[in-house]
Image 1: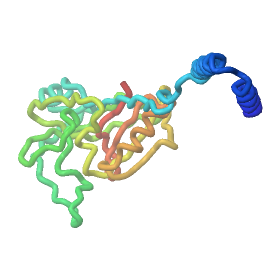
Image 2: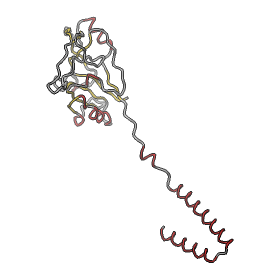
Image 3: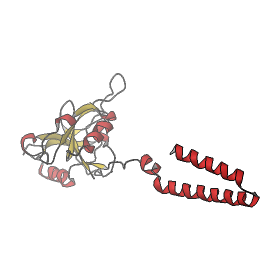
Length: 226
C-alpha cells in the first residue's frame, strides 16, 4: 500500500514538471478528484463501528416477590398457619444497633408482604409459611412475620427489598428443575448484596433466587428476572 502511494506521488511530480500552466491546473483538479474518490471508497471499506464499541448492555430487570395478599387475610381469619399451627401474635420492638452502628439483625421484624421491617409497636403474626419453590428435595417451610393489619404489598421493580438490607443474608439460586446452583450461593451483608444477586440472576442457569436470613435461615423473599 505504501509503495503504491509513493509511486503515484513520483508520477504526479514528473507530470507537474512537464505540464504547462493550463495542463498544470487540469492535473491539480484531477488529483483532487482522485483524492475525493479515494476517501469515499475508504469510507465504504471501513464502516463506522464506534457506536457498537461504546454501546452498553441493557440493565437486567428483576423484582422481589412478596407473599400473596390473601395469605395474611387467611391467617388472620383462621388463626392458623400453613402447617396448622396456632399463630403467634407479637408486637414489634425496635432492635438496637450493633456497637459499630450496623444493624446485622435489621431494625425490626421483617414483614413478607410489604417487605419492610415493622416499626416499633406494630402487631405481627408469626407462622410457618409453605414456600412455593423450590419443590422436591430442597423444599422446606419457613417461619415468617406478616403484619396483623393490612399493609401495602411490595410492588417495586429493579429494587432490592428493604428487608434484605441491614442484616446478614444468604442467596440461594435454583434452576428450572428446582436444583440448587451451589456455585452461585453467597452469604453476606444485605447492604452489599447487589453484586452477588445480579451475578446469580445474570447466569443463564438461574430460574429464580431465594434470599434468606443468614443466621436463622428464614425466607425473606424470592427474586425473579422480568
